Image (cartoon, rainbow, N blue to C red; front, side, top):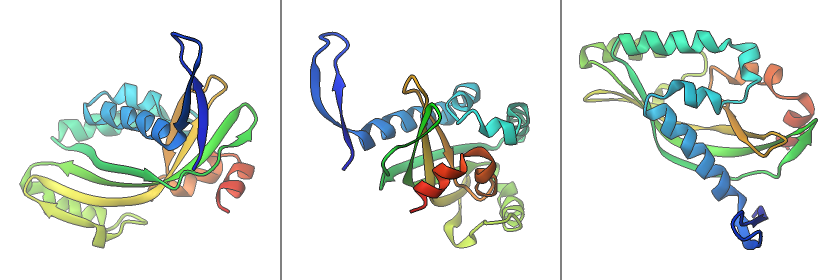
Length: 183
């Protein structure tokens, strides 16, 4: 288990061992909460900033605005992070990887479900066995890597290895980091 010693800002004293997975999970759940509540700007602020070198932020904002206009909402639930690696340093950033299990729900008008399922089936990396129709949309079981990045101020940001993002990871994350975290 990875742990660290934290200091209490009020007392300046040590509060004991803190489980790093708990700290990462709490921060990631704040990100998920922003995304689920519709605070796209807040959620994007918690994504690893270098992701936007590969995919412009305004393109993501436009995609979500289009989904919103179409009555489609994405929610992430039942999140469980596990298998947190050690953090490795590259430049002034620290990187770690965790396994993420979650359920992604895409809420929409029931009349659109079959069409959206057929479109998803054409996407690279889409695993139809992990998706199912529900009354008000589609649920997808996610099992993917989550990369955690801490900047010099220990602020965390995130990037996942979803099928849409995985091919870009070599452009987003330093190669030495990917090599160390793939072991």
